[in-house]
Image (cartoon, rainbow, N blue to C red; front, side, top):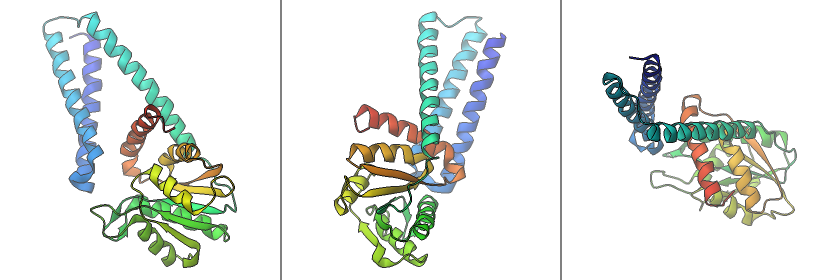
Length: 255
């Protein structure tokens, strides 16, 4: 077997093995409801199929035809370049600092487990509380509807946690109808003037860039981001999913 075959088989084995292990970890932590997690299982299966094909060609001493190799190389190369560029933009977006003394702080909702915030939502609330205590004149909008597997709305969960952490109830407005980031922004904008009020959007670091672009597309004039930290073991899933989400928003013309 040539060194080229050994290299690609080894690379695919590592990639497929890591994907499978990561899928099993996320499945064990979050269960079958984390639908994006199945991408890692699909990637592991794809790597397995490619390894079998490479072994087949290597066993026969054959080289894959150029009409197969060239398109695959182009697809992989362009896809990898796109991924690197978008991930760099996402990471950079997560480093932005919020403007001080904003008129409104908008907290984007995330998964609620029964009546308790998921770890992602908890981190967003913590980041919001820190900002609100440093900027006492800023009003806050808790945004997020109620999913079929949630006992209360995401907005209500945010409200409960903010009050428990010492934020005055009369500073908090609730938006409980939204089911997506775009709806968070559109429905919340009914509570203020997007052209004259300054707004800080609190969301997880990987989500800041897309949220900011969507906000500007929705007419927000004075907007900045307030990043919450990521759940470390969800970083591969969240950053990969966010890359695909940005691609979708770009194709559909939302950003």
